[in-house]
Image (cartoon, rainbow, N blue to C red; front, side):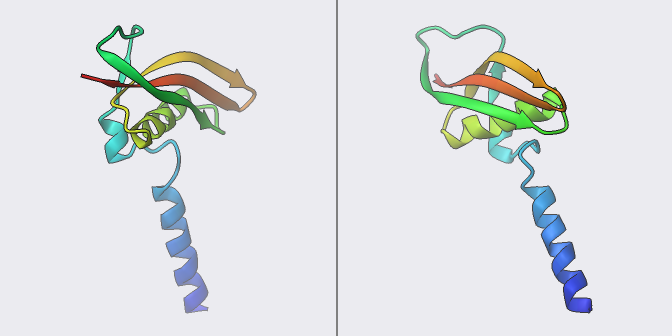
Length: 97
């Protein structure tokens, strides 16, 4: 019984720490741009941040985390699309000087 409880607690802690909407240390270094950048930035990819509970902030955090995984340091949000309880953030990821 104690083993099952321990495994459950570890599983819950792991699930909470790896939630897509929780901003990672690398994600914290990603700047959200108000305007599309110019020649000082290079596109590194496109990302789609998602949140199943409909939180725009958590979906943006997910997009920032994904941008960081692409080694980008900035992103421009192209569109936020709510769909019932789910929201998606479509963004372009950049590496800027």
